Image 1 (cartoon, rainbow, N blue to C red):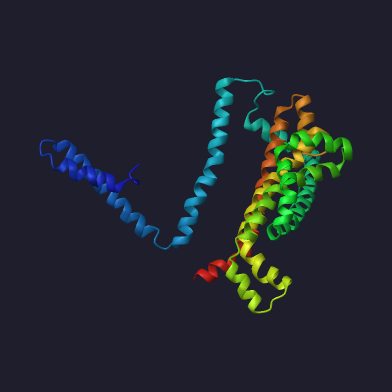
Image 2: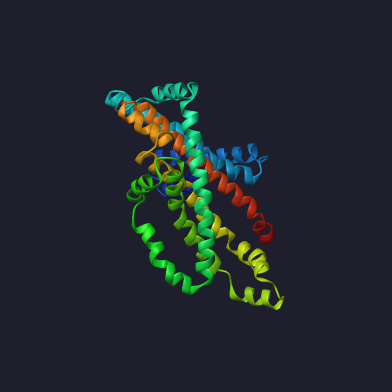
Length: 308
């Protein structure tokens, strides 16, 4: 309470000090100002050995560490105050126990592995096709006019509406889920590829032409490095959407996977297992997002070096 707004406290002290008829207020403001200044000097002397980068990083980490515990506490309070039955809203302890049972009997590991395989396969297929199509669209206006209606149509129709058709055509196996996942990933990566390639300045192309660079050299040494930040931004979006595509396909028709596990748990009113599957999906999405962010930091480390 004393650690925030020292300028505000000092302002209150100066303002109240101009009123000699308020000795109690002046004394209280002076005490508050003294406590704040003592705390600031203590914090500066006690934590001066920490590097500024570590202090800044720890400032960002604290909310990320505290917020899950706050959410669990709110969840527990809602369960206790509402007194809803477990098949409607289970408590965090009940979900944790159900998680342990699912891990121990191997069902959660098996279905998670199936969904992860579909996600990674769909992500690779969708990103690969989006990169090739996006590069062709970015370099050819004629190809853009030809493909634009079809590309927009893929996003105008919800994936939930296409998923039953793909399951009917290709069966309830893994291939239909991979296609649904690839369709979900395709458009964001395609748009970012087009934007990234077209954002390369034209003088750089002229400079590469003056060096008699080949088409492959222009792509490797100019277009890919220049467009990489935008491409990786699209890949981060696609990595999280890939989980959605895989689960949509499993919910429509499957005999394995986390979406199938959700369907089974819903039919048995095992709401705790539904929570377990949903939290597992969140963990998968966060892991993929973190992996892409890590690759982005490593791939774009040269930008920080160049800026220095």
